[in-house]
Image 1 (cartoon, protein in one colour):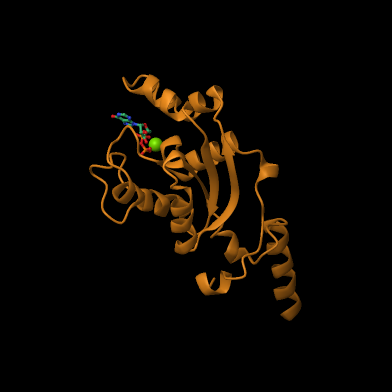
Image 2: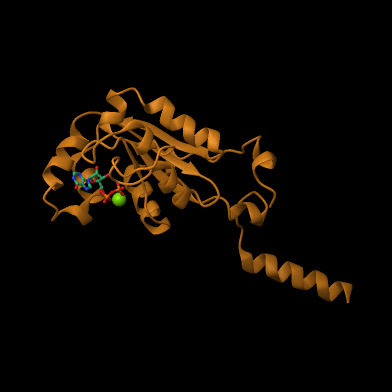
Length: 179
Ligand code: IDP
Ligand code: MG
């Protein structure tokens, strides 16, 4: 009986593959998203405030860089909006200065980041959201966050080489999660 149980456990473990270093429950809270401080946010010295919101919420920073976005990255990033009348102005805006690109990790981080960022138009964004607190117009909304898990994966690989992402163990983990 005991032997049968042990061999089932071993078989299940093998089927699950090597997996992450941590317990399998932790793998479920390692969702990632791309957040970027747009050129207006960098110019207005909002980088620290935006990072602080994500840190204080409890998410974990795993990638960070200041970049002048290359045109091919921007056109891939916004290819869904190519037909929109504001597209040329959007590309010009996003090319107008450096961007701080980040990857944040944590439970449900894609959905929660969108809530934290607020509506696309700051005029409709609720107080307490980044756009609702820091911006006034849709043409200058200071921050980007991926809108789905699928899109987040694509955007992270567009903006970051995998060697630029750092896997690190957070010492506050047990105060943020019980999994
Ligand atoms: P999101 O950033 O909230 O996901 P999207 O609809 O994906 O919004 O649009 C991408 C970006 O394009 C917006 O964040 C904003 O910078 C810009 N944008 C969207 N709609 C307008 C508009 O009507 N006028 C000007 N810029 C716009
Ligand atoms: Mg979007």
